[in-house]
Length: 261
Image (cartoon, rainbow, N blue to C red):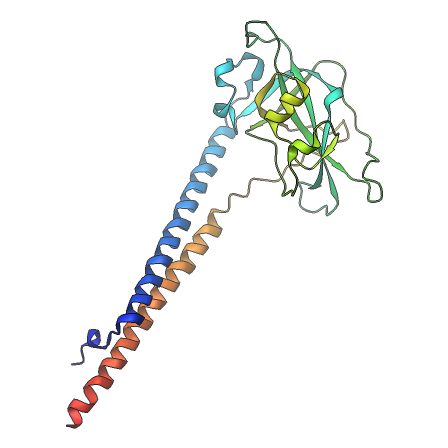
């Protein structure tokens, strides 16, 4: 009976063990990512079934991370002086290949039960109102859309930040511009002097203002991470099988001279 372990060579064995350790660690990392995204999907599903929170009635201490991903609503007036258009954004339905703009407009909250600070100043929330197609020839030729002057009710979901795209420049370099690549909420609040809540309200429903609001479903990608984990664990298993097979063959070659003698 050939002892396969006698065929183990130090350097190849060390290399194989290192590969197995690394690939198993990567597989476990991908599994952890998949579990995190599965938990987030369950959280989003649970939150979606909850009734919307009125931002004007929410205590200031809760107007942060506690609201992220929750259905919310706000009543107030849009501040059309501070409209921002984020360019190079695709249409949310995935079928329209045109590039376009995301339209953001601050909304002054009306009917607040708590003014939010000692001065009694009202708060505002930045509303991600929808998508607008871009003129293929002149990016500054903006398609028409309406911004109501009277009090409106906006329903949607609270986001922790404005959606971003890759950009080589600094968002601070675009201060004061209507058309931008990205927008940092804190910098924008400092730039405009608006008392903005630390969330963004992504508006849902309705299209009478000319903006598309068919937002893409959240692609959490848990299945993709499970696939990556399977590949890493498969590579680790293949490395182990090769190590054992080559060691067994080497051990047989080592015993062959002894048998012939």
